[in-house]
Length: 112
Image 1: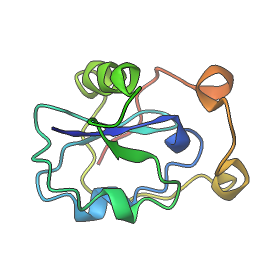
Image 2 (image 1 turned 120 degrees about the horizontal axis):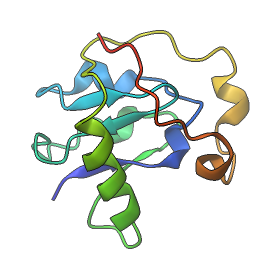
Image 3 (image 1 turned 30 degrees about the horizontal axis):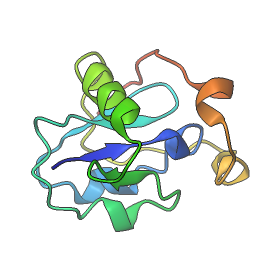
Image 4 (image 1 turned 60 degrees about the vertical axis):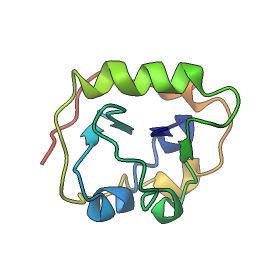
């Protein structure tokens, strides 16, 4: 089992999860984070830290797309180990439906 970041993170990117991860398995895109599934130790400490409820265990149904997306982009985006500033409009996008189709960017973040 591993944890995955879903589209609930897009345009929210609160990054509270980064601070608690004991193995630094988060990677930063322009407007979301992903987890490297081969680095995740399944400890689960990140899941309750996410205000957007964007982190879920891969054992939940329907997360195959997100497992693949996390694996793909964690290999391309820079590692992030320190919480940065969340987007100014993060709260406005929290809970919004269809964020992947509307806003997803494959561009990397700055990491850190």
